Amino acid sequence: MDFQDSLRRYFGTEDVDMLTPDALVAGLERMRVDFGLERDSGRRFGLWTLMYMLGDAPDLDTAFADPADRDAARDFMDMVDQAD
Image (tube, rainbow, N blue to C red):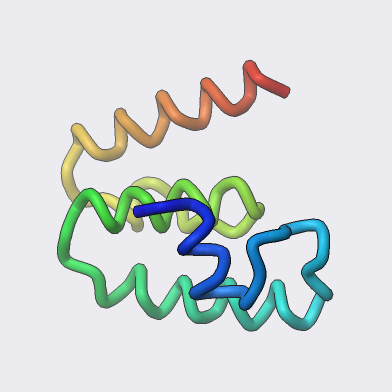
């Protein structure tokens, strides 16, 4: 999943700084729908990471049935937190 493609798909722009509050809400809603429908674990993880970075990721226990996916998500969260 390419970051720029995901931004274009869900938000209509590649520039996160240009998002209006309404565009952000609408794009996140589309992402939540796709996340709920997605069955490929890699694509699900990619959607979750983008939602996390935008402050709207579902809880790990809800998002990932596989413990390995939950661990990977925790590792991602730790990396993002350390980068801040």
